[in-house]
Image (cartoon, rainbow, N blue to C red):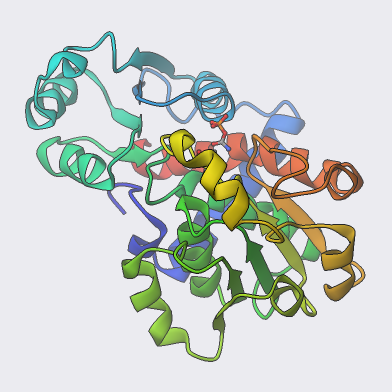
Length: 301
Ligand code: CP
Ligand code: NVA
């Protein structure tokens, strides 16, 4: 494994290896056991979109691993004035040991990886959010002690989270039910991938049907970053595509709820369901730190 660009690139085995290392690093951090695997190493973090969790967890994680993280706002880089990604990749490869990038186009992340000579980590694109999904799988395994055979239900927009959860969930042996309104399906690449998993994947339109017997319920905002101008139209198109108490009744009684955050309570999830499952959701947030530390150790260690 050279980069972390999207879940589709990883095998189920590689995902489980990252999760096990993440569990170990979490244990070490909680017990004050030093784990400075990246001492002397520097991670550059390029942000073309806003972030709370990704920025803080990568920066803190790198510090805990004995390394240094450099925040690079795209507006302040020459990239923001048109310097090509190909050149930026070759320059940054001469200074840094790894790059984390949050941007719009998945192809930009792929290009950074192909022109540079150091590991690239996708910190979210319009297409995928692999770091988040590794943290989600880690959290599910903590609560349920397994992944294989569990049913994961995603309700909402067929966005970066839906794409990465579908690919990641299927690869580790989960059954995945994705429930989106017409016209908001996951990407073509991910839908093609699901064809290999006919019995484990379904795309449905009815939230109550999708949630049936689910072990894990997941949702995300109806309008992702960059789609704000469509928010009013989307609010109409997504009516009913919400995790509510009624939808939760269709899931298993002990079903957990995850949300990558930030949440728009009252839209994709009710305040009641959110607060009832807040502990799980904030454990999920915390696990960003541990899962990403594992990714950095694997790629840069
Ligand atoms: N979930 C997530 O990626 O959060 P941020 O946008 O705050 O980084
Ligand atoms: N789908 C959301 C996730 C935010 C972490 C977005 O891309 O804005």
